[in-house]
Length: 157
Ligand SMILES: O=C(CO)[C@@H](O)[C@H](O)COP(=O)(O)O
Image (cartoon, rainbow, N blue to C red; front, top):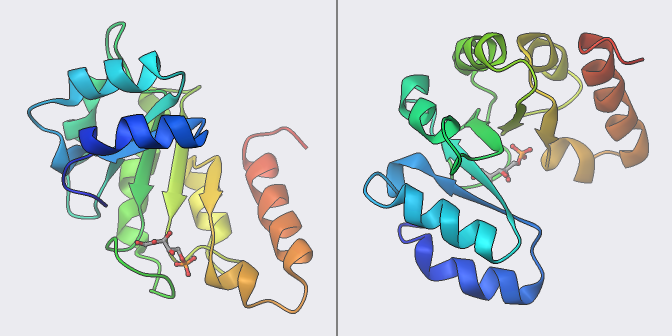
């Protein structure tokens, strides 16, 4: 998480990023300008929210022509890898999935073989995983297992 996401749009765009996700907590006053700027640089805008932030805070960012295209529900406190998945964040994923059936919903933190099913069933379709993949003896198998769980929950396998 960065505190001034606007400062990073241009450099990330120049570096070749295809998407730019900012925290709703860090953009309360300027999210519209931020989304516009991200789109103008050819990137896909996304918004992230911390575990304690109510899901209602992202609703305004999902309406109108300047809307974000992805919501990242943090499943740990942002900061570092290797933390424990917070199952209580799944209520936000379920509510969001019900309200926006085709939205990309990402989850990040503590995702791996033991937690993927609950996240996938709640409606998450984009998975960020660090320790469970990079710490595995067969990373490809872990990725495949998680992909399968998401596809099964979305009825696409
Ligand atoms: O950076 C963060 C949290 O701030 C995450 O992206 C973690 O790095 C994910 O790592 P694991 O929880 O999967 O180890």
